[in-house]
Image (tube, rainbow, N blue to C red; front, side, top):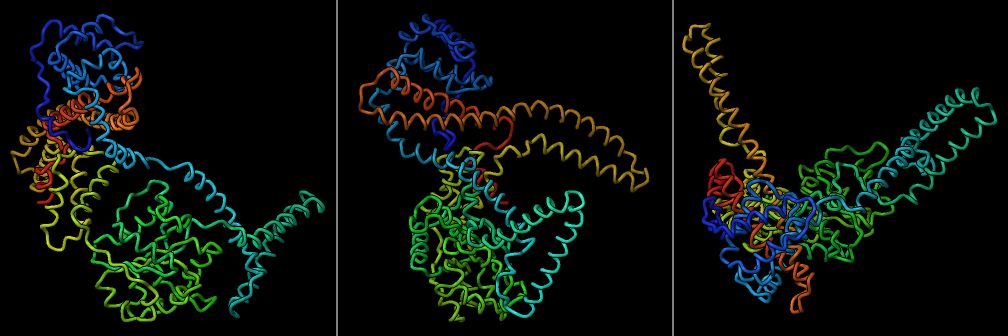
Length: 600
């Protein structure tokens, strides 16, 4: 399987010179024809031969068959390929081959049920934006157009009372500009369309815009954008933009505080995962973990983006705070604001904390807020500001324990598009290695090490040949630079450059050959991911037929599971491990790679 590497892979190597009887060799050739034929017709001779073949011979034949199919890249559709194979191999014979009876095979599938469900949910649950997210994007576009019109003309603002003399003068100027604009349009259109027609059109447009501007605040849908560079975390979750992990106890505590119409403040050491916890909370709301908070949209704003703004000349409050409140509109109760680095509001005698207090009051303009800061900044800047800090209930974010960290690492691997292979002890090794360093908050330190290991196994990594080409290229450039600097007095430079250029040609030819092998290697990894998915999908199907009498359909499903689990998956793993070692690239995260990455 693609996660983790099967420990029995090492004993499952293909031996091209394996001794095989003539009868077995004939069966092998007939099996190859199954995959090569466009139209499938069961080979009766093959079926009869498979009924009487010895289990040890069938194991040998299947091992050779799958390894050759994998090495020669002959498997394009594993489901179709194995469906044909399952048609000709008797279940009884396959059971003898894998040393399992039907009951044992069903028990094994049942034992993998929870594992299969988690893998499919985590690996393929959010691969693309949902239909809801796509429709939402279209509606957002329409709403943005309407808002642009309303904002540009601002007619709705004319009907609001002015907050100051400055604002009253500003509104008067806007009215004059607007009338001037329509006057210019009228002058151009009336001669072309006539007074009657042109007047109706211009009047209709003016009245339409005025009507929309007036009623828009009362019918406007919940915003998907807020000022101050706000991130819409809920939308990111819907689009599959991130997967965050947080401690369940912390998420429950945040939810409980918000349900009581209080504000939460997440406090913890630097890099312990406070921002990730807020993201995980947005994810939990979207999942429906907290029905009372269903439908609420979570926005993240860095308080530093608010602090730098001046007080609005149209009023007495911070301009960005006003804009955020206006954008929230009548839907403010359905919006949760995550204010990161909240200590910035209290730092250096900033007045933002004083202004924020009114927004945070019960019945205020920001009904639901989650603030974030470090322990040091909280004690230094927030704690002593009693009037401000008392508006929040503190939630301490602690380091995750070993089990929690390992779960987060496993979930991260499952969600990673590259689906790297790992050895059985890999995650424990990453955790132990990351704990040795001082000031190593979890899960951040373990996640960082894991992600660096994943980067080393991806397709963008350079093979030894590519590294050698870069080395030789740099040497050539160095010699040319030295020759130019010495004005031709470095006599041996030309000879050395010529030798290196010849070496470069050989290396590039080697790289061209290797590139085909590398492409095949990563294609095999993609195929293994698909085979793993099909294996776990078959587990879910088999679990429904356990303890029942097998019919032809369920019998075939069981054979598909055994072929995927016992043969094709292992053959692909073995091929990937062997080929990556031959090419000198990393395809498996093991202790050696972890040590290498951690030492850098």
